[in-house]
Structures are given as C-alpha cells and as structure tokens.
Length: 256
Image 1 (cartoon, rainbow, N blue to C red):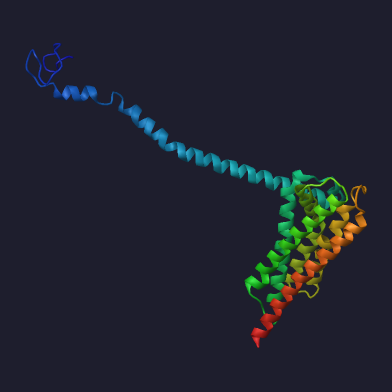
Image 2: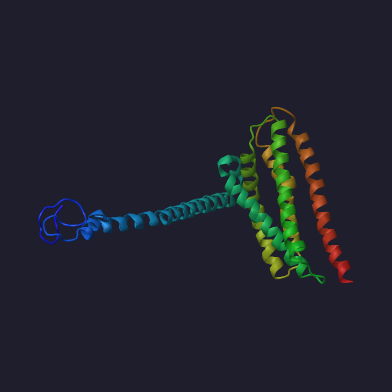
C-alpha cells in the first residue's frame, strides 16, 4: 500500500515503515464502499420495486374493468336493439349476463323501497331494500338451476355459464321495463309498481320458455319440463313475495 504522508510504498500495518505515519485512516478508506453512489442507487431501485408491482396490478385491474364494461355495453345495446340475438349468446358472455341480472335485481329492490317508503307506514332499509334484493337474487339462482336441469333432461347442450348468459340476455328488454318502473315510482305514479311486477314474470315464465324451445327435443319433452319449471318457480316466487308481504304487515302492526 502507499503511505498518504510520504507517498512511499509500505507494508500493511498501523504505521508506515518509512516515515512512521499512521495508516489506520487509509485502511478504513480502502475497506469502505468503493462506490457509495452505486449502493444508494441499488437501495432506491429495491425500494421502488414494490411500488412498481402495485402500480402494475392497479393498471391491470383498471384495464380489465374497462374491458368488462365495454363488453357489457356492447352486449346490452345489441340485445336492446335485437332481443332475438339472445339465441346466439353462449357461455363467453356469462359476466355480462350476470351484470344484467344484478342490475335488474338492484332496480327491483330500489323500486320496492321507494314504493314502500312512500306508503303511509314507511319501511326500513333492510326490509324495504336489502331483503327484496337478496330474495330476488335467490329466485334468479333457482331459475337458472331449474333451466339448466331442464335442458339436461331434454338432452340439450347446456352449461351453467351459458345458461346464466342466456338468462341475462333475454332479461335485457325486461330490464328496460324495470328502469321505467323505477323512474315512475320516483315521481309516485300509482301504476309504477305494476311495470316492475310485469318485468318479474320474465324470469319465472317467459325466459325459461325462450331457452327451452331454442333447441329441438332430444330427450324428455320440453313442454313437461317447462311445466315443472313453472310450478317450482311460482312456488318459490310466491314464498318470497309472501315473506315481503309479512314484513310489510309487520311494519303496519308495529305502527299501531
């Protein structure tokens, strides 16, 4: 090593063998990080990696959300202009079908809440909105399961995703009726609830018929399958409506 005092080469140690100057500071400098700037850059790069991954995940989620929204917009507009196009819908559109079902259920719950809340006795959020929302979701789940089972009995090609997509596709025109019903209910027109109830006929009677009659009969006769779907669907729908009526009557009793 080179002595910092006399600039002569000397052996490693605490003191220079030529002039006796201390070599401790030189050794510390020699053993320290030769490139502190590079170390800082590495640390900064490592710290930025989690933020980069998080931003990438957020961007991917946003892009996926935009894609789902775009697909649903195209799905909805196509079926609004041409409802018979629902025959061509397959399982690839199950997300758009599910969104349609969710929107219909939401609109029904909003309409129910507005109608009951504008009544003399009023209602609560749970009984007027949340309970109808969950009950109608259950009804749709049962109807989808019944249609799927009916298609299998009739020896038709069927999957749960395709059945969900078709139910949502055929529901689009009735969704517009439900929207109209909510708008009329918001201005307290007396027949607004009737429009919403008419739209409720779709998942119980009309949509199963449309789907079951799309394909030729290969197994059990579709008419008998449809009768079975109607009976079970009406029983479940009647039970759910009965629970809603009991909840409303409970509010009336509490009022007195």
